[in-house]
Image (cartoon, rainbow, N blue to C red):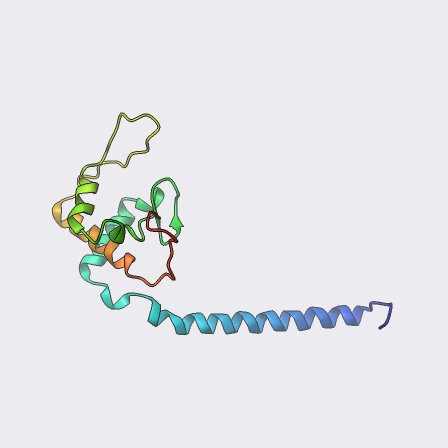
Length: 144
């Protein structure tokens, strides 16, 4: 092997490495796009789920909570809250209605949004939809 590292050798390594990683990126992108139909939950999107998502956004729930790992880490992950509550819609609605719990030092509390029963149904349907997305077991435990 030569002891001198030439400019053309460096250029060839650069171009070869760039081509390799570009092809790897394209292959992984293609694989991801092919996997989406089997992993997403688009067939279960209903008008009620869409309305729940709009409420989620309008009330900035992601400002405190995470959903499927995205958002703030102030409050619990909600991507699996439907499973955490034993798939009991009334328990989730009751939990949201019972907020806030003030006066406990050091405890974070959720604001009271005063949702109507219809809005609570929509939020629960959205959380149910989110819990049914194939996330490869994310979050890693049921507590989020």
